[in-house]
Image 1 (cartoon, rainbow, N blue to C red):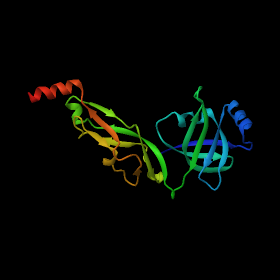
Image 2 (cartoon, one colour):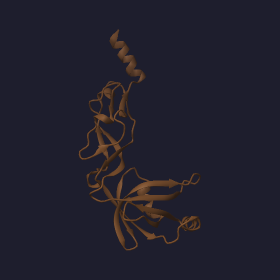
Image 3 (cartoon, helix red, strand yellow):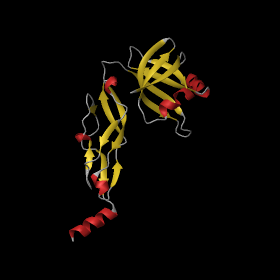
Image 4 (cartoon, rainbow, N blue to C red):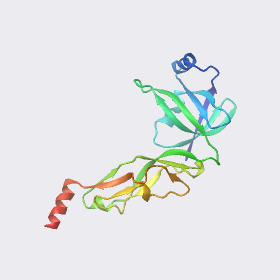
Length: 191
């Protein structure tokens, strides 16, 4: 996984008034969970833009005051109307505790069904996996070369080294859908 460096300031005042003042000053209130105690801090909105608006998953090198730690971004809250980030939750990580993250899915290969006139469809853009953060890749690559017309790849058929996939085993990751042209070609071949 890629790393992202982020620094924040410890929040002394908690509550609605203090939080509103933080947001007015173009900062985002954050909480770091998973350590000995929860840490409330703020980061600037511009500092986290590249961390939030990307499909990639990062290990965040978090500096809060004088303390340094590694964390992952666990949850984001957006304003209902303006879509501004309202709050970020981070989870402290170490090499002993497994973490749960959503990884982007990338397809490789030219499916047999596409060669026969079908259309390849990526049904799940992200998969939820559990494992030690040092074993987590940047993305999950799925080879679709052997997928025929009307066939699919399900989560249960995927195997990742040192990782557990938490999605339902029957969920479809990618499939080759029949197109009108492919159905017509199949009907002409039978008659």
